[in-house]
Length: 245
Image 1 (spheres, rainbow, N blue to C red):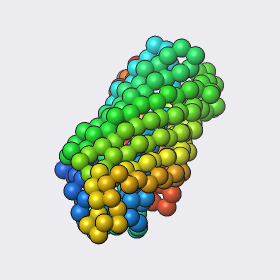
Image 2 (image 1 turned 30 degrees about the horizontal axis):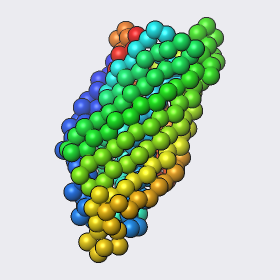
Image 3 (image 1 turned 180 degrees about the horizontal axis):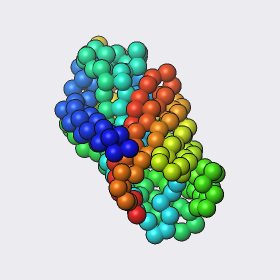
Image 4 (image 1 turned 90 degrees about the vertical axis):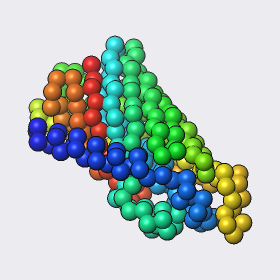
């Protein structure tokens, strides 16, 4: 378990560094076409939505959860010609997140990021449907809804998501599985070179995702997690670490 947690921490640091060096604004304005806007919205909306969960257990009152995460995709969608033309292969988005437990099994979450000219701020609410503190064989089950705003010099996005998450509190590991849906509106601030897209034009995409992963606790009050995400035909990953008390 310790070796797994060290590996996840190293992956998190490495991917965060590579993500911080990769911008989106310049690539978007250079390779913008009408047909590429919706695939771009789908790829980026899926990355943001991955942060919705890594466990089905809400924080509980009075509790806090603070951590960092990296959501990534192993390659752009085949029809995302903006990133394909720019030679982008695997890409990722780092994120800082925090949650506060409230009475009545509610949890308020905030998240954000800022790198290479990109800025995101968002948050949401999660509600515990099942929280079996004594019966370990019954999964924790929760639902969440989120809203995010993303912007850079070339485009801006509005992202909304909903998720259903289940996790099991096993002795050594805590596996989780979740399904979600992302609704992403992308609006361009620039015009395409061939004028087929003008500043202010927008597209909206709605796509599902499914995540499967595992949490471990290398030290008291800490956690490390990693998982795989299916993004409506694309393959992604999520990893992160934090403290929970």
